[in-house]
Image 1: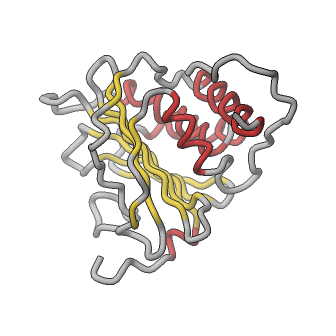
Image 2: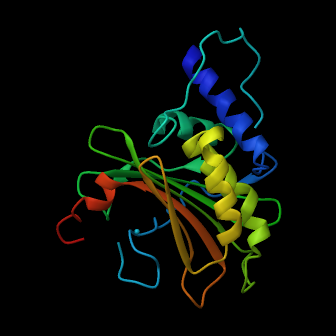
Length: 221
């Protein structure tokens, strides 16, 4: 395993553990599942918004998360989540931004809640949009925001880096369960929302850079 990849996974593991994110005790969802990514706009508007790797030589290269934008490269974050049991799809064209590609990952936790992650990359392969959601156990009509706080705050940490995530995580804790709320950090718009004003079975968090938000929709999309 390349040194940088090992260091990034260790960094992500530390961030997620610190945020009380779910660990590899969860069971992977079916790899064929294809979650629908969130849109640019809130749901009430028109559509648009582990353990560390196996023991080996101690990495000697430090990883400094980016001070603006997304902290880590898309492939590093995807590799980390796959390593802790998420089932991830192949890349496919985004239906929201022309020229962008999206990959999604899913996991069902031991309580039966479905965790869904999404990573959208621009034509150059850089991360431009990322989203995560926690869905209540099938048959229930409400997801307690407390049950979503750990995984979604951990996801924010993975996207921003632990230091930059402190204020957004505090903000998220105060707004989980809102129909729609947004803030910003390092050039990224951060939003949390529910499926709709009436449907509170799923809670989302989403981050997007301005280029993604401004990108035209694909023809016929």
